[in-house]
Amino acid sequence: MKKKILVIIPDRFVKASGGMGENSAPLFEILSDEYDFYVAGFPLLGTEAPSFVSEYHEVAGPFTEVKAGPVNTMIAQASYLAAAVSFPKPDLIYAFDWSVYLAAIYAANFFGGVPMVARMCLSPILLSEQGYTFGLDVKDPIQKALHNAFCEMEIRGLKRADRIVHVSHGYENMYRHVAPFQEKSRLVINGIDLEKWQNKTLKPYSFPGNNKLKIVFLGRLSEMKGIIPLCEARIPKKIDLIFIGNQDQSDLVCMNAINKKVSSEENVFFIGPLYGDEKIQALRSADALMVPSYHEPFGNVGLQGLAAGCVVISSRAGGLGDYLTDETSIFCGMNATTMEQAFAKFLAMTDQEKQKMKDAGFAMCRKLTTNSAAEQLRSVFKELLP
Image 1: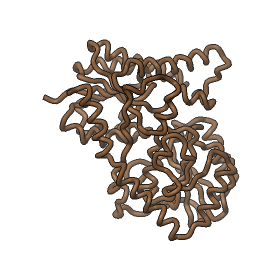
Image 2: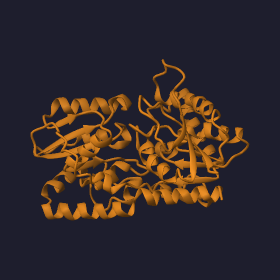
Image 3: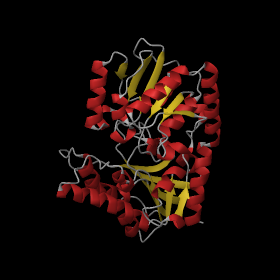
Image 4: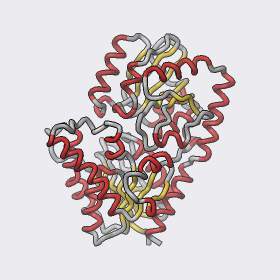
């Protein structure tokens, strides 16, 4: 009889809002022969839960008029807990992110102290060290209290967890000074299906703009992704820069910067979110991908860029440095000046130099596969469910 894994995840598997849902889906599919997965996650928005999920319960914020993201994150603990305890008793709980740790702790205790695995994604503690506090003004006592609650929720989750999963060497190393959890920490490095991203049957994507060279930014439109300095950088006349992302889930300051950039420069464009094959088409049709994040646990879009055959231009922050090196990418730093230097380096590259970099990227993707990630996650589960 298969063991039951209760997954609490602030994302969905189809039309995922970030790397969590997109990365985990193929791993759960591989492991579904051994485990039954019960998932409490984002509303499906008209899509269907994958066939490898035994049962899926949608979680939405309980109050329709609360539009503040940080407030909704805290309120949602009740919704996640309600969804979690509506499932059959699990053998293990897999909590995907600090933003669901409180619900996961209470669910684990409700079910009689079942084992809990905490997946380490973004850390509010590490983010605050770089001045990023989810838009909260920590000089205001109420907003500071909310941010303190996030940090405490993170530590409580990691303390309660029987195992902690890190998605990169880089982010694990960044976190070591915060709390002594090394003895129960394990690595499950994200992987990719290279063959899927090399699908040559897909038609080229038709980008806007008149320039031959297309550089895209693809991902969440938030400050930590380096959007503000990218919008401050001068885009060479030979390049069209295209932003791809979901406006509805964007930081207001980032969307304002993008709109200003688009309205003032004729070679900068915004086209909204892309999913599935359309996303693969876009990256396969782009000449380069910008990943200028200043904080990144892994940065799955960078690996997708390598698999699609883009020249990846990156800050190599955090987990990005696990797989984006001088051999596989161009360094762009985290400010407008270094990004402009990266554009110049890209324009100066010969076709042979670009192909050498792409080949190194493909070799990296052959190491970081979905099968290798699934095997690492299987090992973590087996430690707690022999």
